[in-house]
Image 1 (tube, rainbow, N blue to C red):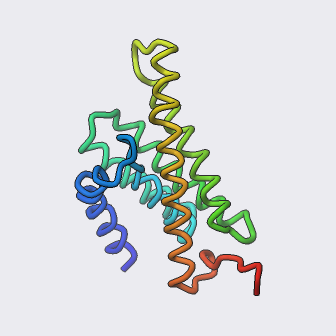
Image 2 (cartoon, helix red, strand yellow):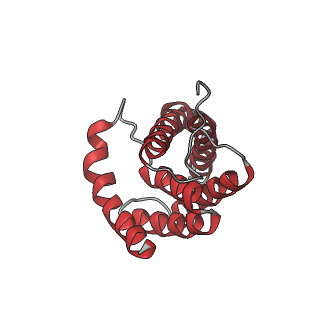
Length: 167
């Protein structure tokens, strides 16, 4: 059952990423939905499932983009693995903690993408970091925190139960 759910998520992610997300972009920057979904799956289901689903998402999304295959596979799979390890090591994961983790992962993935480009000058790299990498990382963090908060409101699973400090 989980396999069919993950397969459906991976296959549904491509049309959503390519058709819906360009309409919700701010200043031409759209969130990396594959990275966010891989991190949330890693947090909820564990590091192995996060890694495997992240690698599958990265591979499928790289088929429809002009980027390098290894870059998308490594960053998305790494996001799922990191979130799974975070979920196992941190006692109570909140949307704030997840958003900080996603911000760091997205910035690191963007920096790897910027520095893997050939013939990039320092000024071009700096422009890409401030105009694309940082806004996309903020988008990813907000989207991941919102998705995790919604899941915490709808489902009663132990890993996604958020801490309510007012109860």
